[in-house]
Image (cartoon, rainbow, N blue to C red; front, side):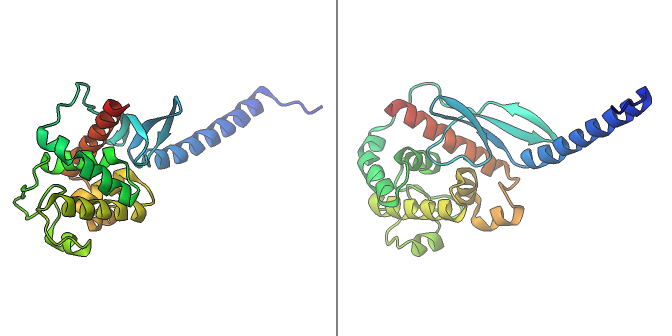
Length: 216
Protein backbone atom coordinates (compact mmCIF):
# COMPACT_ATOMS: atom_id res chain seq x y z
CA UNK A 1 0.00 0.00 0.00
CA UNK A 2 1.43 3.35 -1.07
CA UNK A 3 1.38 6.08 1.56
CA UNK A 4 1.64 9.80 0.78
CA UNK A 5 2.67 12.58 3.07
CA UNK A 6 0.18 15.34 3.82
CA UNK A 7 2.19 17.68 1.56
CA UNK A 8 2.08 15.21 -1.34
CA UNK A 9 -1.65 14.76 -0.84
CA UNK A 10 -2.11 18.53 -0.93
CA UNK A 11 -0.13 18.88 -4.17
CA UNK A 12 -2.00 16.01 -5.81
CA UNK A 13 -5.37 17.41 -4.83
CA UNK A 14 -4.33 20.87 -6.03
CA UNK A 15 -3.32 19.39 -9.38
CA UNK A 16 -6.65 17.63 -9.96
CA UNK A 17 -8.72 20.56 -8.73
CA UNK A 18 -6.79 22.88 -11.03
CA UNK A 19 -7.23 20.49 -13.94
CA UNK A 20 -10.98 20.22 -13.35
CA UNK A 21 -11.26 24.01 -13.05
CA UNK A 22 -9.41 24.44 -16.34
CA UNK A 23 -11.72 21.97 -18.08
CA UNK A 24 -14.75 23.76 -16.66
CA UNK A 25 -13.41 27.13 -17.80
CA UNK A 26 -12.75 25.90 -21.32
CA UNK A 27 -16.13 24.25 -21.53
CA UNK A 28 -17.88 27.29 -20.05
CA UNK A 29 -16.16 29.69 -22.43
CA UNK A 30 -17.63 27.71 -25.30
CA UNK A 31 -20.98 27.33 -23.60
CA UNK A 32 -21.45 31.03 -22.97
CA UNK A 33 -20.06 32.18 -26.32
CA UNK A 34 -23.66 32.54 -27.50
CA UNK A 35 -26.97 33.40 -25.93
CA UNK A 36 -28.45 30.36 -24.24
CA UNK A 37 -32.18 29.75 -24.48
CA UNK A 38 -34.17 27.68 -22.04
CA UNK A 39 -36.81 25.72 -23.94
CA UNK A 40 -39.51 23.39 -22.71
CA UNK A 41 -39.76 19.99 -24.41
CA UNK A 42 -42.25 17.40 -23.20
CA UNK A 43 -42.47 19.09 -19.83
CA UNK A 44 -38.68 19.23 -19.37
CA UNK A 45 -36.50 22.34 -19.43
CA UNK A 46 -33.62 22.06 -21.92
CA UNK A 47 -30.75 24.53 -22.40
CA UNK A 48 -29.67 25.30 -25.98
CA UNK A 49 -28.11 28.06 -28.05
CA UNK A 50 -29.99 26.77 -31.09
CA UNK A 51 -33.75 26.73 -30.47
CA UNK A 52 -35.80 25.46 -33.39
CA UNK A 53 -38.91 27.09 -34.77
CA UNK A 54 -41.07 24.66 -32.79
CA UNK A 55 -39.35 25.02 -29.42
CA UNK A 56 -41.21 26.76 -26.62
CA UNK A 57 -38.72 29.32 -25.33
CA UNK A 58 -39.08 29.96 -21.59
CA UNK A 59 -36.18 32.29 -20.82
CA UNK A 60 -32.79 33.48 -21.99
CA UNK A 61 -29.25 33.48 -20.64
CA UNK A 62 -27.31 36.35 -22.20
CA UNK A 63 -23.55 37.01 -22.00
CA UNK A 64 -22.60 40.53 -20.95
CA UNK A 65 -19.11 41.85 -20.24
CA UNK A 66 -17.66 38.36 -19.98
CA UNK A 67 -20.21 37.27 -17.43
CA UNK A 68 -23.62 35.68 -17.66
CA UNK A 69 -26.65 37.75 -16.85
CA UNK A 70 -30.08 36.17 -16.57
CA UNK A 71 -32.76 37.89 -18.59
CA UNK A 72 -36.38 36.96 -18.85
CA UNK A 73 -37.61 37.16 -22.43
CA UNK A 74 -40.38 39.75 -22.57
CA UNK A 75 -43.20 37.43 -23.51
CA UNK A 76 -46.64 38.84 -24.18
CA UNK A 77 -48.53 37.66 -21.12
CA UNK A 78 -51.79 39.43 -21.94
CA UNK A 79 -54.07 37.90 -24.59
CA UNK A 80 -53.34 39.30 -28.03
CA UNK A 81 -56.14 41.19 -29.70
CA UNK A 82 -55.65 40.70 -33.42
CA UNK A 83 -57.19 43.24 -35.73
CA UNK A 84 -59.82 42.38 -38.30
CA UNK A 85 -57.12 42.46 -40.94
CA UNK A 86 -54.99 39.99 -38.95
CA UNK A 87 -57.96 37.62 -38.72
CA UNK A 88 -58.59 37.98 -42.44
CA UNK A 89 -54.94 37.21 -43.22
CA UNK A 90 -54.77 34.18 -40.92
CA UNK A 91 -55.77 31.56 -43.55
CA UNK A 92 -53.21 32.98 -46.00
CA UNK A 93 -50.51 32.85 -43.31
CA UNK A 94 -51.33 29.24 -42.46
CA UNK A 95 -51.29 28.28 -46.14
CA UNK A 96 -47.95 30.01 -46.83
CA UNK A 97 -46.37 28.42 -43.75
CA UNK A 98 -47.65 24.95 -44.72
CA UNK A 99 -46.14 25.24 -48.20
CA UNK A 100 -42.69 25.72 -46.64
CA UNK A 101 -43.12 23.40 -43.66
CA UNK A 102 -42.96 26.28 -41.18
CA UNK A 103 -44.72 26.85 -37.89
CA UNK A 104 -47.64 29.17 -38.79
CA UNK A 105 -47.23 30.91 -35.42
CA UNK A 106 -43.67 31.81 -36.42
CA UNK A 107 -44.76 33.28 -39.75
CA UNK A 108 -47.56 35.18 -38.02
CA UNK A 109 -45.07 36.53 -35.48
CA UNK A 110 -42.77 37.76 -38.25
CA UNK A 111 -45.69 39.48 -40.01
CA UNK A 112 -46.74 41.08 -36.73
CA UNK A 113 -43.22 42.33 -35.99
CA UNK A 114 -42.49 43.47 -39.54
CA UNK A 115 -45.66 45.22 -40.65
CA UNK A 116 -48.34 44.89 -37.95
CA UNK A 117 -50.43 43.11 -40.64
CA UNK A 118 -50.44 46.12 -42.98
CA UNK A 119 -50.09 44.86 -46.60
CA UNK A 120 -49.15 48.36 -47.78
CA UNK A 121 -46.37 48.88 -45.23
CA UNK A 122 -43.11 50.28 -46.58
CA UNK A 123 -39.98 51.03 -44.58
CA UNK A 124 -37.62 53.95 -45.10
CA UNK A 125 -35.09 51.41 -46.43
CA UNK A 126 -37.52 50.21 -49.09
CA UNK A 127 -38.79 46.97 -47.51
CA UNK A 128 -42.30 46.19 -48.73
CA UNK A 129 -45.52 44.52 -47.65
CA UNK A 130 -46.52 42.16 -44.88
CA UNK A 131 -43.13 40.49 -44.42
CA UNK A 132 -41.15 43.59 -45.41
CA UNK A 133 -39.25 42.18 -48.37
CA UNK A 134 -36.46 44.19 -49.90
CA UNK A 135 -36.68 44.51 -53.71
CA UNK A 136 -33.78 42.12 -54.35
CA UNK A 137 -35.15 39.56 -51.88
CA UNK A 138 -38.62 39.79 -53.38
CA UNK A 139 -37.24 39.07 -56.86
CA UNK A 140 -35.07 36.21 -55.60
CA UNK A 141 -38.07 34.37 -54.12
CA UNK A 142 -40.34 35.02 -57.10
CA UNK A 143 -42.58 37.74 -55.69
CA UNK A 144 -44.21 39.76 -58.44
CA UNK A 145 -46.27 42.13 -56.32
CA UNK A 146 -44.89 42.63 -52.78
CA UNK A 147 -48.05 44.50 -51.77
CA UNK A 148 -50.35 41.60 -52.66
CA UNK A 149 -50.82 39.65 -49.38
CA UNK A 150 -50.70 36.08 -50.65
CA UNK A 151 -47.74 36.78 -52.95
CA UNK A 152 -45.80 38.51 -50.17
CA UNK A 153 -46.56 35.78 -47.63
CA UNK A 154 -45.49 33.03 -50.01
CA UNK A 155 -42.26 34.83 -50.81
CA UNK A 156 -41.48 35.81 -47.23
CA UNK A 157 -42.12 32.28 -45.98
CA UNK A 158 -39.92 30.90 -48.73
CA UNK A 159 -37.12 33.24 -47.71
CA UNK A 160 -37.53 32.41 -44.01
CA UNK A 161 -37.43 28.68 -44.80
CA UNK A 162 -34.24 29.24 -46.82
CA UNK A 163 -32.61 30.98 -43.86
CA UNK A 164 -33.60 28.15 -41.51
CA UNK A 165 -31.97 25.66 -43.88
CA UNK A 166 -28.90 27.85 -44.26
CA UNK A 167 -28.43 28.06 -40.49
CA UNK A 168 -29.39 24.42 -39.91
CA UNK A 169 -32.57 25.11 -38.02
CA UNK A 170 -31.07 27.78 -35.75
CA UNK A 171 -34.07 30.04 -35.25
CA UNK A 172 -32.12 32.83 -33.55
CA UNK A 173 -29.58 33.16 -36.38
CA UNK A 174 -32.30 32.83 -39.02
CA UNK A 175 -34.33 35.67 -37.52
CA UNK A 176 -31.20 37.77 -37.10
CA UNK A 177 -30.42 37.21 -40.79
CA UNK A 178 -34.00 38.08 -41.74
CA UNK A 179 -33.58 41.41 -39.98
CA UNK A 180 -29.94 42.34 -40.63
CA UNK A 181 -29.10 40.14 -43.61
CA UNK A 182 -27.10 36.89 -43.84
CA UNK A 183 -23.89 38.82 -44.56
CA UNK A 184 -24.05 40.53 -41.16
CA UNK A 185 -24.68 37.22 -39.36
CA UNK A 186 -21.82 35.52 -41.20
CA UNK A 187 -19.48 38.45 -40.57
CA UNK A 188 -20.10 38.44 -36.82
CA UNK A 189 -20.40 34.64 -36.65
CA UNK A 190 -23.64 34.99 -34.74
CA UNK A 191 -26.27 37.57 -33.91
CA UNK A 192 -24.86 40.97 -34.96
CA UNK A 193 -24.29 43.45 -32.11
CA UNK A 194 -27.10 45.66 -33.35
CA UNK A 195 -29.71 46.64 -30.78
CA UNK A 196 -32.46 46.60 -33.41
CA UNK A 197 -31.60 43.06 -34.49
CA UNK A 198 -31.35 41.66 -30.97
CA UNK A 199 -34.65 43.25 -29.98
CA UNK A 200 -36.22 41.97 -33.20
CA UNK A 201 -35.17 38.38 -32.50
CA UNK A 202 -36.54 38.54 -28.96
CA UNK A 203 -39.77 40.16 -30.13
CA UNK A 204 -40.50 37.57 -32.82
CA UNK A 205 -39.80 34.66 -30.46
CA UNK A 206 -42.02 36.32 -27.87
CA UNK A 207 -44.85 36.78 -30.36
CA UNK A 208 -44.49 33.21 -31.63
CA UNK A 209 -44.78 31.97 -28.06
CA UNK A 210 -47.86 34.13 -27.46
CA UNK A 211 -49.65 33.01 -30.63
CA UNK A 212 -48.86 29.37 -29.93
CA UNK A 213 -50.11 29.68 -26.35
CA UNK A 214 -53.39 31.22 -27.51
CA UNK A 215 -53.92 28.47 -30.07
CA UNK A 216 -53.39 25.65 -27.53
